[in-house]
Image (cartoon, rainbow, N blue to C red; front, side):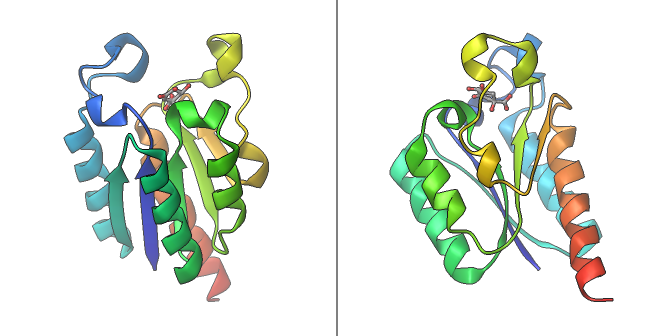
Length: 147
Ligand code: DQA
């Protein structure tokens, strides 16, 4: 089962970026965590990050064409990008939205995600562990469907 783990703007700077909010895990460590978890679960995991919205849209279109599962941290785009939401709405596989921080406990403008209404589910505030949990969820889902 193929899983695209897609990350939006500024997430490539994890580890040095606002460590009090996002923790000390670097982006390279996050990629490693997702790939290791994927190997353990027998998932075909592809991890990507971009600061360019059109690039994320292209990846979402490709995932939609493949019918693949997606784990998405849309970062700041969560709060205003209708284009990212519309691309998410085209997905045919499950979509897990992940936020490292608890967006509801932060500034008002972070409380709403335009993506959440088209996501299968949302994980936020559990740090980078949210990605691991999302992969486990997709693994369980896959097994349930194949019983
Ligand atoms: C974030 C939360 C967003 O509000 C913020 O813009 C980010 C990261 C998170 O993972 O907690 O860039 O999505």
